[in-house]
Length: 119
Image 1 (cartoon, rainbow, N blue to C red):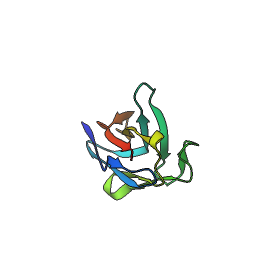
Image 2 (image 1 turned 120 degrees about the horizontal axis):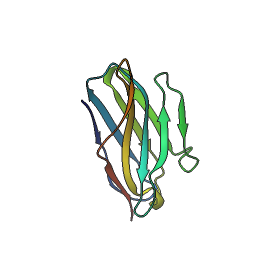
Image 3 (image 1 turned 45 degrees about the vertical axis):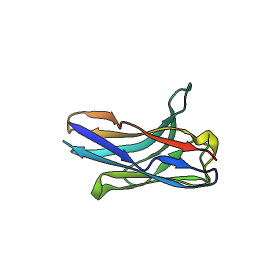
Image 4 (image 1 turned 90 degrees about the horizontal axis):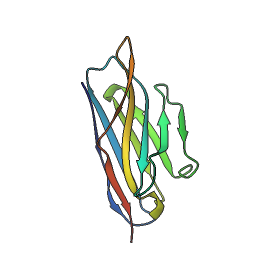
């Protein structure tokens, strides 16, 4: 089994910063793409950012220039540094990882961490 454990969410004022972390553990041969998604109340889950094992990144236009995704392969951990937060960034943030099990690749999700941006 593979587990994804997120941390770092919370309440922050507009313009503030938060750093999310997600540690992957369990039966892992290799972790491929890792990423962050978010889901606001009444909306569909949307991509925030992804990162490949060699550090190539992709992010949503709405967070470009404000959010930075990074990873530590030795720790099987992915991070999301969120700066200049806006009320519209309020959502549950989910970590995602595509894990290679030698003969197959499977996608796993974390349990989600709440981020609330409010004054």
